[in-house]
Image (tube, rainbow, N blue to C red):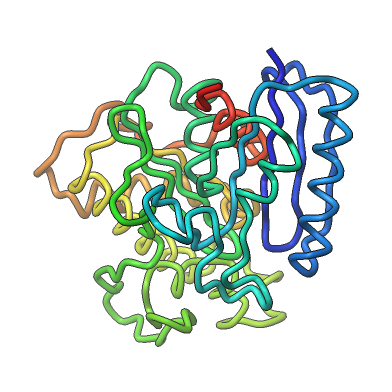
Length: 291
């Protein structure tokens, strides 16, 4: 059975036609420009694929924040995003109409988490968390096999955490200053170090602070929902892979023996799908659609 997926990112969008990681029939990268131009190009691609090779459902894994409350009058729309011109834009309805099939709309990180559970580091688990540390910090949190849901999706990248003693930098988040994203994201690091960032080696003390912050995030996730595993990926981790073991160490130090983790030394680990978790996340979402 064939599915279509769209990973909608702040810089680029990836449209994909597939049934599994090893069976990708087509893919296309579309730059994220204005909403009209971007969604028109994606819709045209989906329409062409549907005409040539019928697919059964569409998954849309989007940057956010987005409205995922099906009872809301603005369900399927972008909310107050810092991406210029995108606030309030309808996404799900427009792409569903272009595809002509049932569609599932969720965050890019929830999609990636579901893909990891189906094909990657979360296989066999119903309770799992996926953290991406890139331009921002996002968390896909799956409880009982489904993304957590209330009036909206979780925004754990914006929680405030205990600061590393001696680090008093104010943080870069325009909303919260020193939240996790404001301290540990790629944007935060560029704001703090500028061009110097590219020359920071793995032994630079800044990484101790980044690992501390992400360890605190993991601590909060463990205490809130006790996922059986946490996968951590994204551009910052890809460029500084030594951070994974450091985050695991900081998490254990922070929990201080109060909670015993499954897979003690390998609880926080790399995603099994690597950079493919994003586009495959849209396919994993499509697979949950009801015809």
